[in-house]
Length: 104
Image (cartoon, rainbow, N blue to C red; front, side):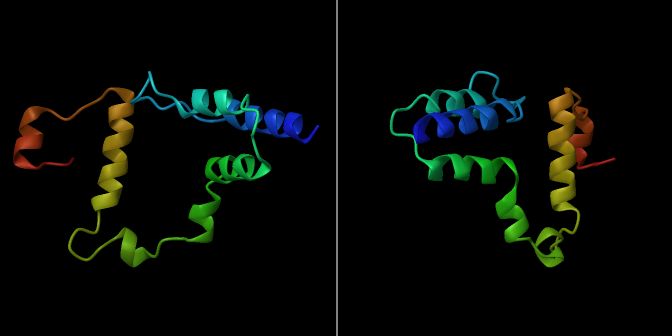
C-alpha cells in the first residue's frame, strides 16, 4: 500500500515538472514517470523530487547579493538568465553584438 501511494505522489510530481526546451529528447518528467513504476521506490526518493520541484533547497540556502552580483561583473547572472530566456524563445543576438560584446 505504501508503494502505491509513493507511486501516485511521484507521478503527480512528474506531471507538474516543467518541460526543458533545450533538451526535447531528454526530459526529467519522463525519468520521474518511469521511476514511479520502480518496485523499490521509497518515500525518500519521492520527497527529494518534491523538494527539487518546489525549489526548497534554494529557499533553505539562499544566495547572498554579494554572490549573485559579484563586484567584478555585477550583472553577469542577470545576463545569463536573460540569454537563457531569449534562447528558449528562439531569439538570438546578431553576430556583431556577440563579436563586440554588446548586450542591449
